Length: 116
Image 1 (cartoon, rainbow, N blue to C red):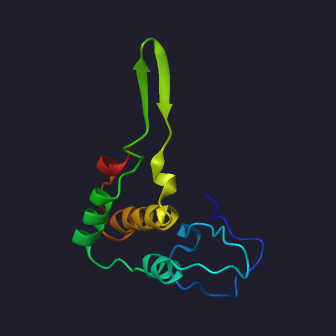
Image 2 (cartoon, rainbow, N blue to C red):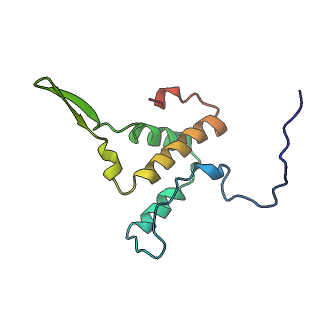
Image 3 (spheres, one colour):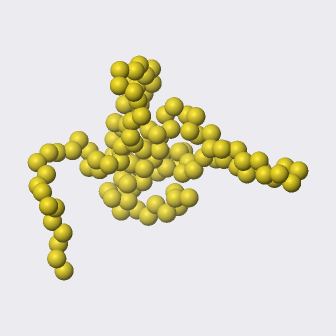
């Protein structure tokens, strides 16, 4: 079996082992974000403990618990996911994903119980 080699060489290094695990930033350039220090803290959180990674996967849900479809008098009322209203939603989802990746890649654990 042939090994796959990239078409070009990479001469740069990444600050973390999985460069694509960070959520995209939707901030306008030059705008002020009061939550920026908190966003950086969550984004830069490094996982080095399996117990903490399990705790993160347990606390941060894989899907919004508020989204519902309710049948009311024969009409279906859909309540949209309210988690998107959380200003740190993307950072928490990224942290949960990094915790899942840590448990899988570093600890070699099965994380299917945390996947919806």
